[in-house]
Image 1 (tube, rainbow, N blue to C red):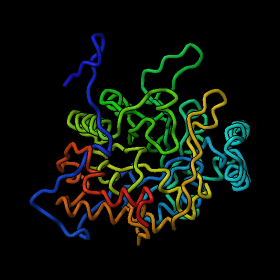
Image 2 (spheres, rainbow, N blue to C red):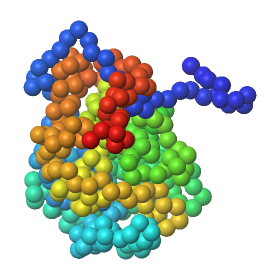
Image 3 (cartoon, rainbow, N blue to C red):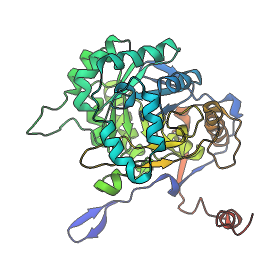
Image 4 (cartoon, one colour):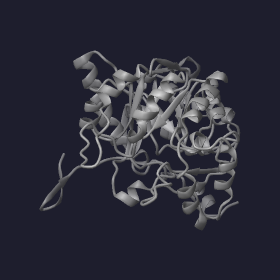
Length: 386
């Protein structure tokens, strides 16, 4: 329904995760009997969780661990791992620098050229450790880096930017032809990011193996504040899920959508799938793992921009191992650990035996769901009770 923003502008209401809740049905299921597997890029994942292609989140080691624990980790080819042989030392500098020195350091550090031999080396490191090798590049570099990654044995290639479309206009450079790129890569290509039905539908028509949904909701991303661009996640996921279903009905090709960003706790992951996502991509929750390369810090992908940084370095701390964050047991009661247990338990309470059924559960608008009846929790957070 259109809402009048003013005489010259009509708009519509959009919703974020904090404004919705999931409604149980007449059926409940034993959580152990739920199936949370999903197929992404021809690979079956036992866990529908993907670690974001961010330097503080995914290293070759954590990418392999994500595969070991049933999920997927995506390595950022724009990051330090493809620029520096001694990437660990560079990450230590990022973690140690002051807040005032952080952005200038990042801008200087990321001026180091991407090295083709390191792109191939990192992919081979992931595969040698038994992991699914997935890497990410911005569209401007995909034409060069894609073939290198393919020849090194990459399993999934991700083309990712803040906003991606099939109708890019530029007087200075030719846009990436996604349809041609997907055909030439001969490995599954996932693209993003988008937030609308129309863009998701046109992206699917290029032959991609998946679409990332979400602009600016990530904990370390400041794009919404800097650019004013974005759509709340619950609405953007539901819109793009509708595009996926329309595309499947018309072409008999199922292109999964991956909710990217804005999920801090297990309940957010459950809501994302209930809104229509096939899988989720998360950054800051994985950055809290003891194995994460950020050493307790997490930063946005667009932070190193030489002219308009759009990512902050945030201290997330270290709360436990990657296995504990994904599979438990949880040490805390805030939903920050055991995401698999949370998803299975939620699906059991909602009567959803698999992810497709989870996408069909009833969602209600509930802006007070996080605060209703929580007077003592709020008081404790404010330090009124110990």
